[in-house]
Length: 86
Image (cartoon, rainbow, N blue to C red; front, side, top):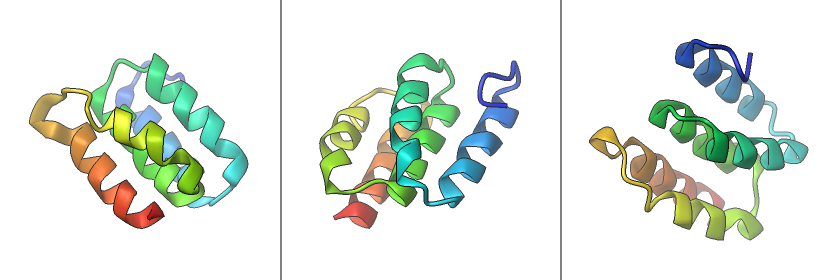
């Protein structure tokens, strides 16, 4: 599901995995953020980091928030995530 051709499926996969709260998934979300070409999937990865991550992930989220995306979906997700983790 995480590498499905449909971005909607990938978004759903990131959300479901994030809802588990499993801290071990953070590395996976970071990897998918870097490799996926969909801004919405990348935003879902950042949101899921907020659900599973810790303060040590703040720097990654801050950097991700600087990525330019349509309608600022990534920076908006990063802003919310920073508030959740902090």
